[in-house]
Image (tube, rainbow, N blue to C red):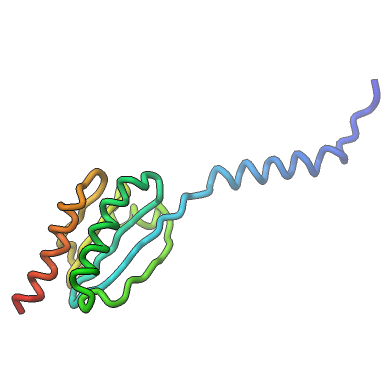
Amino acid sequence: MPPIHTKKWFPFVFLVMIFFISSCSHEKPVEIVEFSPSDYKVQFFSDKSDLELEDEYLSAILDLKNSYPSLINKIELKETSVSAIKADSITETPALVITKDGQTITKLSGQTSKSDVLSELKKIVDAEKAL
């Protein structure tokens, strides 16, 4: 039986261990679409796991932007981690969070229709018109 040369196997075993360790701790990124009409802050969280469901939220945001272009003049796209959004009490995606003065006004997540999302977003517009 020929001797086993551990020096030849060491780089391979080392690379496999590194790959395994890094794949276990890798978090799926979460994208945040954010805009701030007046005193409000609207954030949409997506991990792209259910594009059809996320489309309901995004379609509502685009409809609001098309109806009120002056209200939503700057939309930002950010990226974060799952653990970071869980710290903000967001347990599932997609999710839409509306805050005012640091207080959460509305939080929608999971299976939600476009009309329900748009209804919540229009409450911001109605509040602005009332001022």
